[in-house]
Image 1 (tube, one colour):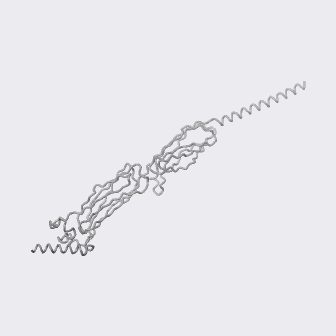
Image 2 (tube, one colour):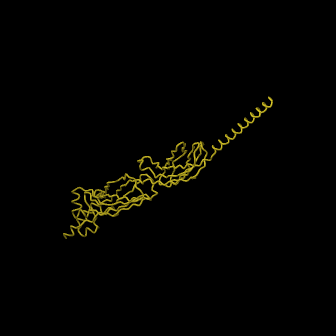
Image 3 (spheres, helix red, strand yellow):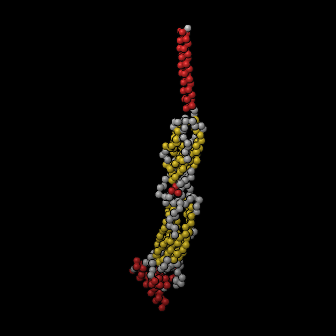
Length: 325
């Protein structure tokens, strides 16, 4: 009779709280993350594997009195975890752990994984924590120097009158700029001296970001070399850049090495991160001899004129001498 009375008292108390004050009875829970490096400053290269250590934390929003009642008293545990839980029939000698389910979301060019997707923590009114590791790598086609995020989520589904909870955090990073330009043009040109010649150069951007291409290293004595260019090239795009060459008067065959310097167009990061790998390309220029032939034509004409004048003078002298005789 006494046991029956105790059982009915417990049942009555439980049903009273459930039916009359479900909101007031609900126990809220809380999840937090602790991450030392939420933002990775150095850009990540495709060859790198990055590991981030973090802590996931869980607690019940209970004061010390609430903890004593709900976690340390049988009736409180029944009210917190539910009458129909197995724990009641075992008199709740041991409270089972809270299970947190972890998930990770990353861009499709990024492979990210956790070393643990299910964390078990004790119920407490202060944060209990577990250590978790995030590992990730990126593909070569990851967009250069664009801030991206890996999202980590933690879910607690709740039990009895303990409410579910959810939280998430972001790991911010940026892929490194991987330049890959190819240069295509004729390697030999026959050009006239002292005249401008336009040299077309096709540049293809096979890297992972838009870039501008500067042409360097063509300083040559007595040569005038400039570029006419819209030098911003998109990913997978081929653009024609014109090099304007004016050689000196008496140049012989001349080989000139041009340096093509790719630089990422993302302008809000350190210039050292934007610098790509230079590509050298040599072009040999041959004198077409046009100026030399002009000079030869002028010399022959002058000789003919002079010879003609001399012949006339000789004829005049000869006629004058005949008249004197």
